[in-house]
Length: 222
Image (cartoon, rainbow, N blue to C red):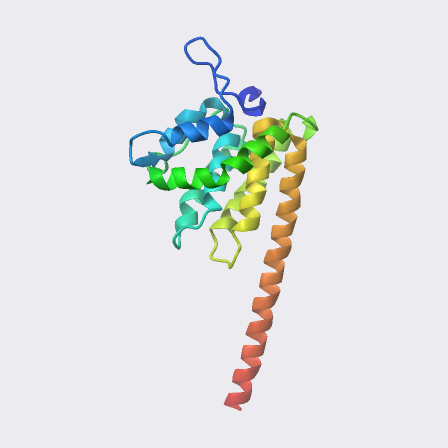
């Protein structure tokens, strides 16, 4: 069965027989207005309804780009990995285990983070629109989902500045899925390539350092 809701430009699903026309940016702002000091992942899933895949990956990727304590990126990477796998396997709606849904962050921290990115979100939101449909179809979702799994794994690794490129790529892929925008998908692919190049350079640097260190130790021993 086609997953039509996940590929329509972002509008909230019907509620009380009325179509809620709030944009993505309006929804993420309203989530921060609750008086509950903790924002659980389950609340985000409920807020975005059937259009959850693109919207959830987008908001978690944007939050992951903010500075967090060591290990904090994994809080965002794990649900992104799970949702990306579900996207790749063509699920119609998001499923996450209870422990993931219970994961939470401080709502004041969420509001502070959202306030920093809201201008960019609204600007990009106004630029995106349905185009290049073959990049946002059912078959394309399989490839996009698998790429997002790899990006989220890289984002969680303790690599210097290694979270920025995969995080940006995830943002573009999520925008493409949410708005049916093939141009955003292409931008995501471009940043994925840049991420791969960066990882290759890091690997080469580590190997060079290890090689020189081994030679230095060999000279000392002999």
